[in-house]
Image (cartoon, rainbow, N blue to C red):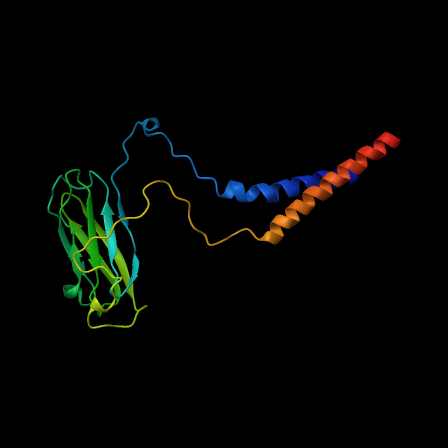
Length: 194
């Protein structure tokens, strides 16, 4: 019984102390040469849910459109005629980054449709998180219509889950490790006496 309790305590203590290190380890990216098939170019909506006067960015990877293609972009939704878009010309590598700003009195879902050598429709939802304004010029932190925002990141990033390791959990793991070690030592000393 003492051996089982010691083994369980040692294992539990080691797992508690090692778990935060394992959880924060960055994944390794596979080598580009390991995949013999090219990945199809993709599209990504930077912020699918935004507030009034905020900007959402839609990014297409290299090769999605033709080089330097002028892509037809249309927006549908409440007061869609007052929405602003910019960046509808593909780059030399066929990539495209478009910014979308809803009208200052916008609300609900907006469909941003791309019609070029390929078609794609992005859905962006506008909520009333900020006070309604007749003009979006009142907030200096908001990009002006027609300006493009830089993307963050670029490599493989871990998701921010908002969690952290409690000192009580770490202390409990350390205590379990010490208790398991003590039980092993007591068991060894009993064997020597017997």
